[in-house]
Image (cartoon, rainbow, N blue to C red; front, top):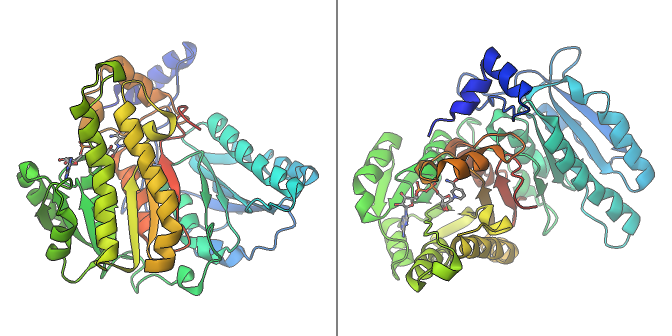
Amino acid sequence: MADRYLRLTGTAPGRFLTRRLGLPQPAALTRWSAERPALDGGLLHLTAGRSALDLAPVLARTGIGPAGSGRTAAVVLDATGVRDVEALAEVHAALHPVVRSVASSGRVVVLGAPLDPADHHQAAAQQALEGFTRSLGKEIGRGRTVNLVRLTDAAAAESTLRFLLSPKSAYVSGQVIEVGADREPTAADREPTSADPDRPLSGRTALVTGAARGIGEAVAETLARDGARVVVLDVPQAEQDARRVAERLGGSALLLDMTSADAGARIAEALPDGLDLLIHNAGITRDRRLVNMPAERWISVLEVNLASVLRTTDALLKDGTLKRGGRIVATASIAGIAGNAGQTNYGASKAGVVGLVRSLAPRALDEHGVTVNAVAPGFIETKMTAAVPLFIREAGRRMNSLAQGGLPADVAETTAWLAHPASGAVNGQVVRVCGQSLLGA
Ligand SMILES: NC(=O)c1ccc[n+]([C@@H]2O[C@H](COP(=O)([O-])OP(=O)(O)OC[C@H]3O[C@@H](n4cnc5c(N)ncnc54)[C@H](O)[C@@H]3O)[C@@H](O)[C@H]2O)c1
């Protein structure tokens, strides 16, 4: 499972050799740890166009100080006021002189405005920021990430900016995230976090499906770190692992096949005090090209990855088990966005998850006060991907802007941001955790 190539390029001779051969140059990413919770350096706040955003107080609360004459770990470019092509020149003027000085594993966050349907010049200029962001992400290198956040209200985007301006978003790049996309943010979206900012989920109960191992285990661990009481759900065959994870995290195990018709009822029964965070992570692959794919393979993948997600979500919303202020985070995949040979069943199921999220999100928020988002992992180093044949595995690892695979913790941190009490204005989003994979848009 270990990425030996990444280790090789971390040594001086390895770097020399691979550079001479013109091979990819992955940089070891700086990820969150209790010892290093923040980016190493300061923040540069720049503006293009005439912005009406009250950004300074929000940036001051993100935990990263002004760069001043020291090391620049992050640049935030407020381009919300860019309304025409002329103003786009200010984007170039602002970033051209500073990009080189952004530290390794640093961040560039571009802030844009929603596209104005009544002003095609504004829409053109704002859409231009998307192409700009994605292109810069592909060329910037050294483990640095570039993302675009479209917003109207700086305070409602605080949890998102905190995430993007931290080591927690190490493997999230080339993304366009809309905050307050389906309605104006309310006071509740700016809800202060719990008394202890290090444990924003304290007092909340999280159910993570497929949490006995892999990405689900990391999600459960991260939500527990943030204060949630976790329920580790997995199939009865995974009992030993599920109990081990639950015990380690001070939570409980729920042994249940999500495809059983009464899964929703059994979850509700196990959680009489209700549920705050529903994390649909359980998933399977049964790869074959369509010409060789028996119906059972199609049916089982659609059943686990999509039908059971729809069924249990409906049940838990309807019977009120999922409480107001709750969060649903479903797991899509870049295979559901870009498609993948041998994965017609899996690609269909994961694209279905994207459809579910986009359609349900505004209604779930209106009717139940619950947000619905998805994470879409790219190549993540797990047992699932360790089993992939060597050449395909190497291609998966390198074919992204960071030239390496992600870790389960990267998906877990993204989930924790979406689950955060202050992320109420982030709804209906599909956020790829893929190091800006070259597959898909
Ligand atoms: N690893 C990757 O690179 C990658 C990429 C994209 C998407 N994903 C998605 O992320 C999720 C987790 O992937 P992973 O790599 O950790 O997989 P994994 O196989 O290591 O773990 C999946 C877990 O889900 C459980 N599970 C399967 N069917 C279940 C059911 N019917 N009911 C309850 N639990 C069930 C399994 O027992 C297992 O513990 C999946 O949805 C997967 O499709 C993974």
